[in-house]
Amino acid sequence: MEKVKIWKPTPQEVEEAKKWPTWSKEESVFDWYYDEPEQFYVVEGEVEVKLDDGTVVSFGAGDMVRFAGGVKCTWNVKKRIFKHYNIG
Image 1 (cartoon, rainbow, N blue to C red):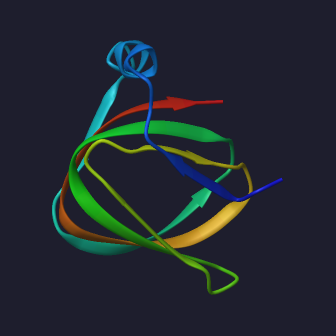
Image 2 (tube, rainbow, N blue to C red; image 1 turned 90 degrees about the vertical axis):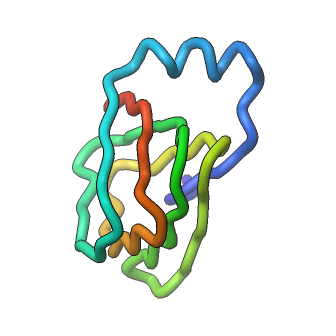
């Protein structure tokens, strides 16, 4: 199973994501652990994430992202992020 998947969502996926709770974060760097899978739609912002195996992924406004459960990483929020998220 891949640790992170990033894709351009369909209009239907975006409409569904808009029903999810929201979260935002200013520019910062922090460690994170996904104890459960999480999928989110990025409304605005730009982020670079370094996984514990050294892999670096980037995503931003308009992207749909899914992290698998058990992923350890470090987030580098380069431009304030605002997202709709769904855990589980």
